[in-house]
Image (cartoon, rainbow, N blue to C red):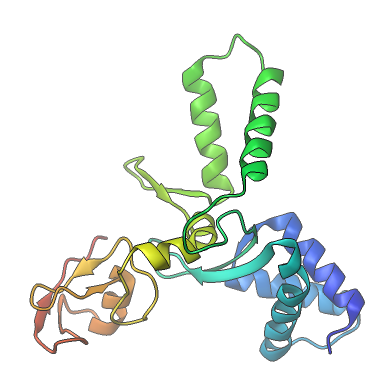
Length: 213
């Protein structure tokens, strides 16, 4: 059983940060352990996350973790409200209304002299900063780790696309020309050990893949 004070401090810290890389999350929980004079280990870290999720699940919150497809497979931990909690992709109406009202209120407080393009850029920058979106060097936008983890139950049900190497959801992935199975670029890179071709882990045929970097 995890110390109650440690659980409270860990949850408050995770809520304050929202979404962090795995190493940052572990460093944060380690500081919480030090503050509560508790030992830290990977097992204790997993126990804390599991116990927090057990307690906050009834309030439709969850600490989810998963790999980002673009950040070389970096694992993120995110504190999320289960807005899309069902495989059908149903969204709680009150949550949408609250989000719209909050955005409208914030927008109304801003100077009307600001251009629309400036407001849009500021909004996109904020979404990237909070890891809801990811932005490439070419200024292309796609779902960030926080969005992917939030939408995970819906995406897993609707998108039949699994990485043949790591067995996790593969949205932005490459496809084997023989069996059409998919794999993340970062998984292919590690699996190929520097080569641009591999034996497909699914069908064992030659697979020449393109390193997007």
